[in-house]
Amino acid sequence: MASAWKDLPEELSEPARLLAEELRTIKDTAGLSLSELAGRTHYSRASWERWLNGKRVVTEQALEALIGAVDCDAAALRRLWRRATERTPEVAGAEVAGAEVAGAEVADAEVAGAEEPTTDEPTDETVEGPSAGTAAEPAGEPVPMAEEAPEAAVAWWRRPAALVSGAVLLGLLLVLVGLRVSRHDDQASAADAPAATATPATAKPAPSDPPCRAVGCAHKDPKTTGCGKDARTLQTQVIGKVVVYLRYSRTCQAAWAAITEGEPKDYAVITDSTGDSETAMIHWGYDNYSAMLNAADPSVGFQVCGSQPAGHDCTSTVTDLASVVASTPIPIGPASPPPGAGAGAATPSDSAPPSQAPPTDQPSPSPSAP
Image (cartoon, rainbow, N blue to C red; front, side, top):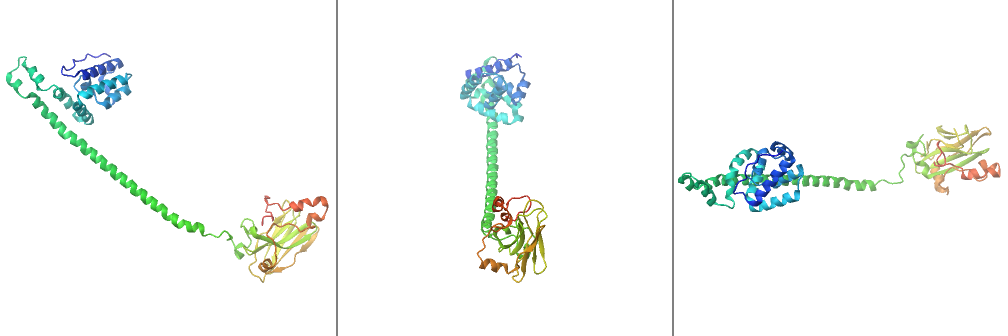
């Protein structure tokens, strides 16, 4: 909407006049009222009244807000503003302070007309004005000086306030940075302390330590406890095609039974001389192994007996299993039938499976691992 604009002040410089006229044109083209313009740019209605009527030069922040709020030639508008502010730096500085102190905007609007002539047109023009019929005494009074006094007073308390507020903000920033640095140092030292203590802890554990030993392994699975990693076969016994084994782990000091080349319901039982026993029964597939018995006592003897439809037979009884391993070069490995035993004793065509035999990853427990 077009507005009935007041005449711009005669003492307004040419660049400032062109800028004010361009601002009026932009407002009228956009069809905005002063209230709508204030709402879009987030600057008060009183501020825009001063800027549009040439009482003050618009601030750079308000100019950028206007460029963002309406459709205009931003580059041309910025050029006009630079030319206008080059001639009135004091006015532009006072306007920035006025935008920050919203409560003083109305008072600034009333004083602004008297403040403008103090820039480049000194006392001569202001003195000539009253000569149109007013008394000589008021004209002769230092009117500009009287009007400059409020300006000096305003500049005196506003500028130190801005400096003080800037110093306070800088002090707060320094305090925050100091707190952050100290907290970072505390976190770094706290992170370093566990790292120093954690290094020996990670280097300390012996890789060969088993999860259980001797009586601690009794009635546990040799495969899940890791005791099968150094397992040896101390005795074997062939029953038909079935082979039963006495297995022993020197690290865990434990023994167990294993059975291969069998069928479901074939089983092997390990028994020690104290009467303790564990059974390895084939539920499906062709092999299985039992839980472990404590083999730490060298005086305790161990025997494995197998049973299947073809018959029943047992290995020899062995005592002091650790000494047997130490005195005999028995290799570590899975439970596998001896040459010519088990399925290999039947037909040549059946000789291949036993040599490949012990499965290592069967869903049911497999003696090939322990």
